[in-house]
Each structure stands twice: as structure tokens, then as C-alpha cells.
Length: 315
Length: 252
Image 1: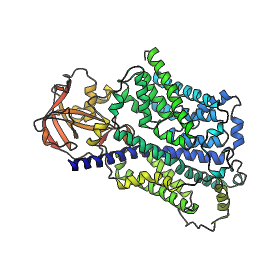
Image 2: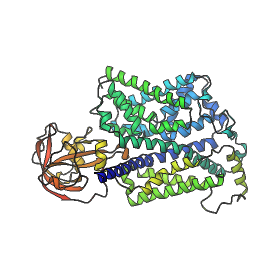
Image 3: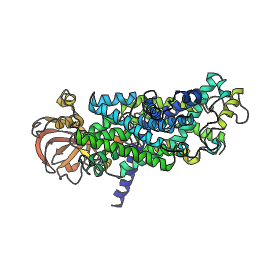
């Protein structure tokens, strides 16, 4: 009896490792892409140019943040370091939050994978509309905050407090350097950032893999499939599974016949915006209290939309 | 930890992780963790890791901590000094965790021991009929059969059809002495979304085969009762031990 218990534990450890490595191997290339984009933005995008591009009006700025995903095709792992960099470059917080939440959905790669899974139809359109709407609503709620930069995690002491002006923002010494040095600098920044963000990804993946090894999926799925509870269940599943937004459309196919359309959309909209690993990544950027809001607000907004779809549309 | 030391360790972690991923790719063990259609992603990751590691100037000519090799390195270091985050030992360990676990824990695909927690299904929710029916009956794998079963509401529809497929033995409290399931994991993107599927097998020899061992089952379908449901069940003519396939998962 004792021996079999031991081998059971070993099995658990191996299965945990397999799931953990699966998530990490899938996510790390995307995180690398995000940090490389962030490094390039730091070196090649001037703060003044970015600020000149952003509309003055709070609503239009948020809207711009929401659709920016089309120009930066990153998923939830890559978007966090990039957003952090854009904040430092002077992007307004509401626009940054809208970008952070919308980009993992409103981007060409996710569009393509959702199309591949569902074809042209309600699910595809609703996923993008709901994603953009949720991001805008949450972004606008955050824009009501009076001192936006207090929402950020206390920056390293070398920043000198505000976290606003990175000392290299002007980069006059760097601007005069040959392209080779600029590129190398961008890659060094990306590498440092990979280590800064990578630890959050690792913790998030450990938690997601632990959940999958210890909590039976049936426990979640058996809770119910009513028009309201099903939406909660699928949003929770999206949060727990922590699958990359570029591929989650294929995974949701497995639930199409047993779950309501509103709940499938809850999975497809909330999962990519916020999941275990992105929550941990958020902690590297925002204060803890703000991270709680970033997890809860989109949950509630998507939940409402899911219920509305279930109760009013016969999809 | 000095900056130079920290850089060395970071570069080392990146290079070793890239080497580990290259090993996974070459050995084929990569597909214990992610689907083959994402190999390009791993190749991209390996390339980026090498590029990022080389930005620490530890690859190539040996770095000298005190004397910059060329003048621009001074500027470059000045430039970074103000903005560089300090990375502690915990953070370095966490980023190295895939490497550490990958090297120390035996590489193994998900097997029967992972089924109770992940659940197992005799049906696929999203069965596309065109995918399975084009495959000749003799060449259908467990996934193709589960698709075929899912496409029909009539449990008797497959009566008499010849079954011949490889999978691992799975059983839980629902199974009788003469029953087990020949199962496979399907995976869409990575091990996090792996789902077990299987076909119920009935045979007097069933008890001779241990849970989690790989078997080849040949037999034919009959309508039967399993755990209160009417299902197509295979009456086995022969069950033989089989080797674990090189590609343990099936990809829908």
C-alpha cells in the first residue's frame, strides 16, 4: 500500500512537470517576442513622438489603446512587458489598460485562429466586439483614477520615484550611435526584461499546472450548464487553464456542444485577457490592489455580456 | 551579486535553455509537451534566446569586466546602468525552472495516471464527420473511432465493424472485471489542454493487462451497456502488448 502511494506521488510530480513544461514551452517564445518588441520600442520610439500620436480626449485615447492590438500582434504574455514600456513612454493609463486587455484578442493572429476554429459567424464577430468593449469599459473605469501613476508598482529606486520619465527617454547619447549599438542595446533591454517578467510567467505556470494536477476538471465542469452558472464555469476554466490566446479557440471547440454560447464566449473573451499566468505578470507592473481590479472588473463585464447573450439570442 | 556575475548567469540560463529546447526538438521529446504544429514557435524561441544571450557579450570573445573592448561599450553600459533592474537569485531560479525540472524530472507524456484528474470521454464534442469517414476502417486510430462514434446517435450503428487500434489501458471504478478502456490523449496546443478519449473493450482476458500498459486490440463492435449508457463496445478477439508509439498523443 505504502509503495503504491509513493509511486502515486511520483506520477503526480511527473504529470505536473509535463503540464508545466507544456505551458512554458508554448508561452516563452511569445514572452520573448513581447520583450523584444518592448526593447525595440524603448530604443527606437521617441517619447515625444508617441505622445504626439495619442488623442487628447480620454475616450478616443482609450479607443486607440483598444485597437492598437492590430499593430502589435502579441498575446497575453507578450502584451504585459510591451504595455509597461509604453506606460514609461507616456501612454495614458486608460489607453494602456485598454491595450493590455484588448490586444490578446483584437489582433490578426487570434483573428486567424478563431476563424480557423469557428469560421465566419456569430462567435468570431462576438468575440472581437466583446473583447474590445470589455477593454474599453475597464479602461474608461481606470481613467477615473485621479493619480494614474500611483497604480503602478513602485519602480526600482534608480527611477527616482515617479516611474514616468525613464532616464533614457531622450537617449541623446544613444541616438548618435550606429544602428548596431542601438540594436544590441534593444536586445539587452529585452533580455533583462525577459528575466524580470519570466519569473511571473514561471510562477503562473506552476500554479496553473498545480491546479490541473490536483483539482479534477470534472469538479469544475459538473457544477452546471445553466445560462448563468455555465458562464461562470467557463470563465473560471479560461482563467485556470491559462492557455495562450492564439490557440484557445481550438480548445474551446471541445466544449461547444455541452456548454451555452454565452459561456463559450466568456471563455474566449475573459480567458485571454486575464488568466493565472497573466495575473502574475500584472503583479510585475501594477500595485496589488490594481491587479485585483484588473482580474475582477473584466470578469464582471464579460459575465454580464455572456448572460445577455444566453438569455436574449438563440445562437 | 555583481552586475557582471548577474549577466553571466542570465546568459548561461538563456544558452542552456536554448540547448535544452534544441535537444527536445531533435529527440522528439518536445511532443510530450506541445503539438508538432508549434515546432516553429520553439525554433523561434531558441533563436531569440541566443540573440538575447549574445547581447550580454558573453558569447564570442571573452568579456573583460574592467576594460571595455571597444569605445561604444562604455556608452552602452552608461546607458543601461540607470535603467537596469536587479535580478535576484529567486528570479533567476524561477526563469531557469523549466530547464531545472526538464533535466531532473523524467520526461514522460501524460499517461493513465493523469486520466482520473483530467477526465476521460467516449465522445468528442466537436466531431467533424468528414474527417473520420475518409479514413479506411482498418487504419482508424482511437481518435478516428471516437469521432465516428460521436457522429451517430445510434449505439448499434457500428455493430459488426472491425476494430484494430493501439492505446493505453485505462480503468476506474465503473469498469467490470472483463472491461477496460483503450485510451489515448488528444492535444490541441500543449499538455495543458490534453484530453483523454477511449473506446470500451470487453474481453475475458481483460484482467491480464495492467492499467497504463500499451496494447493493440483487435475485435468488433457490438452495442452494449456501460455504466448505465448504451454504447458501442468492442468485443476483443485478441489483445496484444504493444510498444508506446513514438507520438503518444493524437492531434485533432
